[in-house]
Image (tube, rainbow, N blue to C red):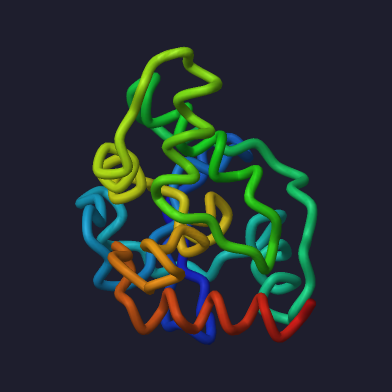
Length: 158
């Protein structure tokens, strides 16, 4: 069931099924699913509590399951991404190197960008922590302004 969470970044849509998080999208985000368009009920429960803590400047632990839909490669990228510490960043190439080592096959920074763009669980699977070479802020499905806000928010709470 899709619900709404009002955040400092604007409206977020949360999609849960049996307590497992299937999606967390920002309003206007690329790849926003049609099935979540009509959500109007306010979010409550573990995901909303996690978001409350996150936006309050905490680094909350997950107390719920996340179940994004994607290919094995995308899952490998998202898994590696969840290992990037709160308040820190990695480059696309650094993430590609981690994924390559874990999978035992080479991958390119460009392929990492494609997998990140398909991430259905914004903020919690933190694609905002991936930057270009030399820390340059690049691409984000939720918009560059939101990416900058998230990076500054995390840095200010360390």
